[in-house]
Image 1 (cartoon, rainbow, N blue to C red):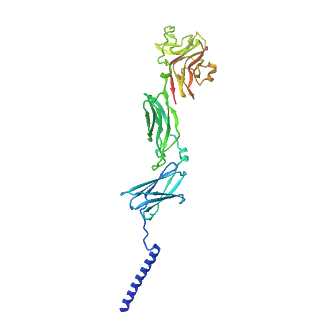
Image 2 (cartoon, rainbow, N blue to C red):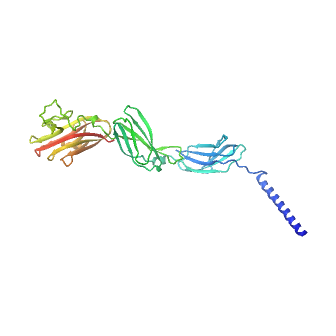
Image 3 (cartoon, rainbow, N blue to C red):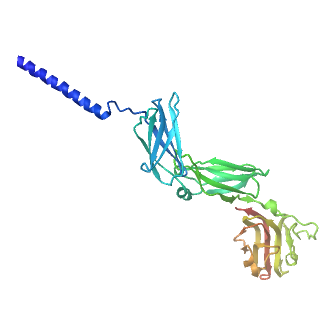
Length: 397
C-alpha cells in the first residue's frame, strides 16, 4: 500500500512540473504577456457610389480606440483615419474616392492608444461609373397632354426593382417661372400633373436610378426634351368651324357666301366658300353644273414653333366622288396646285363619304411660316361638293 501511495504522489509531481514547463514555454512565445485585441469594426458596410465608396461601421466597445486602417486591392492601397470616441456607440464613416468601376473587398482594423489592433473586419461592395450609367434606360410615357391648362403625363409601368427611383422634370409655367422638380417613381398607373403649364412649351426630363439601397450616389439618364400634346386650334386658327362663320362684308345669297377670316383665290370663291346648308355654316368648294374650278384654294397662313403637328378636317358631307381635292400643309405663304402636292409638308386626299376625316402630320425643326387649307380641282363629274364641319390643329410633341 505504501508503494502505491508513493507512485501516485510521484505522478502528481510529474504532472505539475509538466504544466509549469508548458506555461513557461507559452509565455516565452507571448513575450511574457497576453495578446490584447481592441474592439473590432462592427457591422461593416460598403455603400456604393459613383467611382467611390463610403464605408461605415460601428464602435460598440473599447473606449480606447483611436485609429482605424482600411486596406483594399489586396493590401496594395490603404488609408488611416483618426477616431474620436464618445461615451456611447459610434458610427464611423469614411469615403474612398477615385476608384475604378468594379467590385472591391475592404478590410478594416481598429487600433487603440496603446497600439493594440483589432481582428479583421471584411466586406465586399461595388463601385459604379460610366459603364453602368450609359446602360440606363429613360422611363417612357404613354401620353403627355394639356388638360384644363395643366400638362398631364401618363408614365409607362415599370419594375422598380430595376433601380428607378424617380424622374427629374424641368418646365415652365404660364407665368414664365421655371421649375425643376423630382417625382418619386411608382410602379404602375403613375400620372404626373404639371399645374398651370405654359402652352406650346416643352419640358426636359431624365430618369433617376439608385443601383442598390446602400448607394450614396444617384445615377441618371441624359435629359430628353419633349412636347405636350395640345389642341392649339383656338390659338392659331381663325374661324375653325362647327359652325363656320359667314363673312358678312361679302355678298350673300341666303345660302352661299364667303367664309370669314380665311383666304381664298378666285377659283374657290366663284361659287362661294361658305354654305349655310340647313342653317349650319360649312366651309365648302363645289360645282353643280357651274364648273369647272381649277386649283381652287381656301387657306390660312400662320407661324409655328418647332414641333410635331397634325392639321385635321372633319367632313360633314361629300356629293359624288371628288375628282382631285386635298387637305394640305405647305411651307411659306401659298398652297401648291393639285399636281404639286408632293412639295407640301403634308397632304391627305379627300375622296368621298367613306372617309370623312382627313389628317395631315408634319414636323417643323425651327419656327416656320406655314399655310394650311384645301386645294381642289372640280370638273368631272359636273356635280361635286365638299362641306367641312370644322378643322383642328394639334401639337403632338
